[in-house]
Image (cartoon, rainbow, N blue to C red):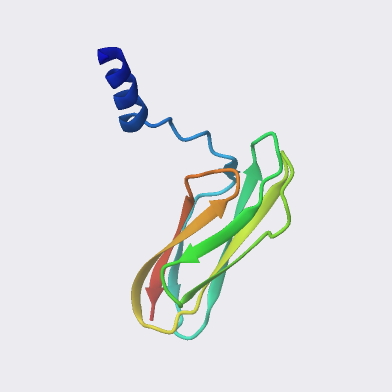
Amino acid sequence: MNVLLLAIFITFFNPPADPQPVVQWLNDTAYDFGTMEQGVPKSVSFSFKNISNQPIVLETTRTTCGCTAAEWTETPIEPGKTGAVTIEYDAYRKGRFKKKITVFFDQQRKPEVLWISGTVE
């Protein structure tokens, strides 16, 4: 009986580890725009490589506000091939900003996180 309880405890309170990432980012995952002119949007592209042994799909991205927009490679990315996420910041509000962009791939449970920052004057 004790062995059964131990097995149940281990199963429920020690979940399996997340699988390995399916992408390798080819540049830094954080980008600082520096000083930006108010009302002049800027964008940056984050490139990644499929390091898995099967095609992957970038399903969606989530930004933290309407001031940040994302576009991404929508076709399946074959093993060893690259894709990109392009982030645009609208620069309408003056001041310092730091925004988080969450990126979801179909073959990876844990999302990837990108950051942009800068100061609008």
